[in-house]
Length: 186
Image (cartoon, rainbow, N blue to C red; front, side, top):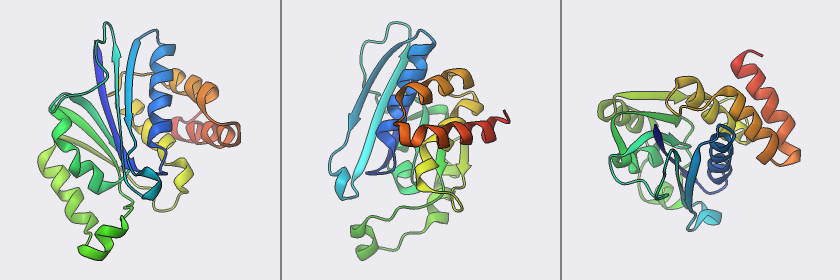
C-alpha cells in the first residue's frame, strides 16, 4: 500500500506543519516516508505545496499529475489550481474559508461558491471543511483529522495524536489535542 497526499495552501496557514504531522504519523505506523515542500513566496501570501508519499518502498517524494490519493487544500482556489494532481477516485478535502491573495483581490473577483462547484464537478469525492467560526490556528488539525476520519490517508487517529505530541510546537499542542478530542469524540 502506498499513499500519495498533496497539501496546498497559502503561506502562514500551516501547510508545512501539516506535512510534518502526516510524515510523523506515517513513521509511527512504521511506513517509509518521502516528503517535499515548495514554499516559494510564502511569506508574501504565496502558494505553498507539500508532497507526502508513504507506504512500502517509496522511491521519490514528488507526486505526478493524476497520482494523488488525497488532496488537502487549505484554501478553495489552491484546491482548483492543484486538482490536476488528484487521481480518479481520489479525495479532495478543502477548507471553505478563502484566503484571497492581494493580486487576486486587485485583478479579479474571487467567487468561493464557483470554486467549490468546480471541485464538485471535477472530483468524485469532495469533503468541505467549514472553518468560518474557528481560528486559523486550527485549520491544519481540522483538515488532517478530516482526512484521517475519511479513511483516504490510511493513517489512524492514534498516529495523528502521536504526531501532534511529537511534532507540534509546545504553545499549540494543547489546543490541537483538545480539537482532536472534540473531533473524534474522545
